[in-house]
Image (cartoon, rainbow, N blue to C red; front, side, top):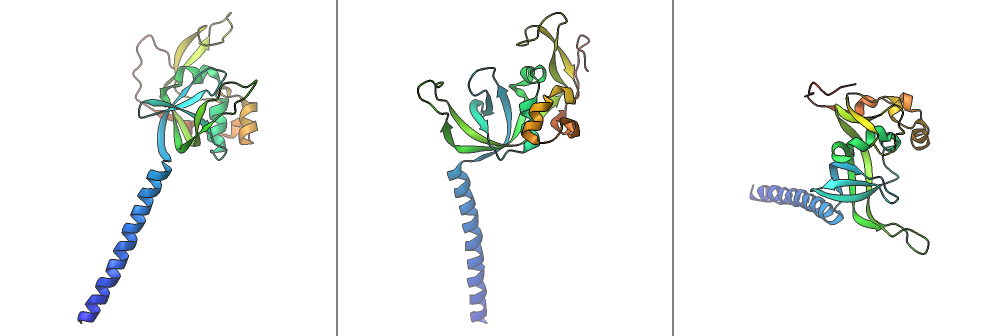
Length: 199
């Protein structure tokens, strides 16, 4: 009987060691790789260099979307028209879900090239807009460029015209009309003032 109890205790001890070892290995891997998974506010800048960053603990981190990103999510995000992107790309309304790599990388440098920029690879899985969201509507008779010649309205839905169809097809290899754009919206309670318009 004592021998049986001893064997049971031995195997229980092995099982506990394996479990604890697995947990320790997972924690070690998470902390040493540093790959960070989650939801992040997206910031986009109109510039000649890298123009996407995410908010991590309140700080902007420059990113480049990795090639293994979800093609539909990446295609729609890259093809989003400026009328929708620009008023929502301050990290408060437009969000991305994915994995941020631990190791930084640098853009190529050298004679005739732009200054090198530090960035982190980001594997995009999904993105969404809090809805209703703001969009720019060009003022008739004026050329829309940077949002200055436009008025803002509130919008509760996305349509295929909110995306560059050709660019989306180049990335996702399918037509934008086949995509359920509703999955990229997260409805919020509407609190419109009498002066606001919702489309």
